[in-house]
Length: 146
Image (cartoon, rainbow, N blue to C red; front, side, top):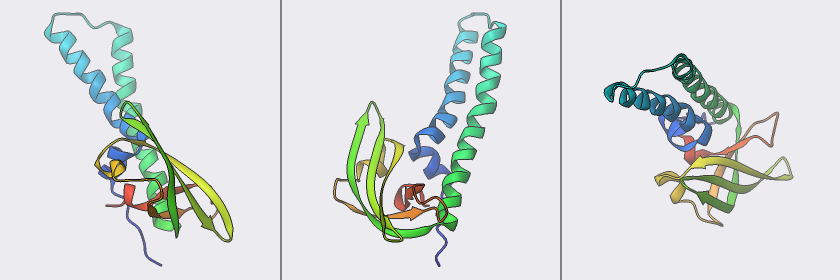
């Protein structure tokens, strides 16, 4: 059995939830700096929002990374193919079919539109890594592997 290693940065760049976890705090901090530069005061609510985003965002990214890395590291690799791709304003969903233990599944992953996801085409064969105990939980290997 080959262990598939997930790349934290590739997960953060491709997975929609993980990228939100990384970009949310950056955006809030950038707005805060701009507010300070233009002499705007920062009220308590904004301060709590900033602190909350700076704590929750990275935790969300780490949780998504550990979920994806766990499946890639312990899952079973099967053949699949892309059935549908939809993007809207830089984010979207990739749908794929795969067979695991004689049963056919359709999976999907919420993704950011980037160089990795733009290479996907309908009908493209892909390697899908499937959670052994929850076969509906699966990820397209090349989107997240380093």
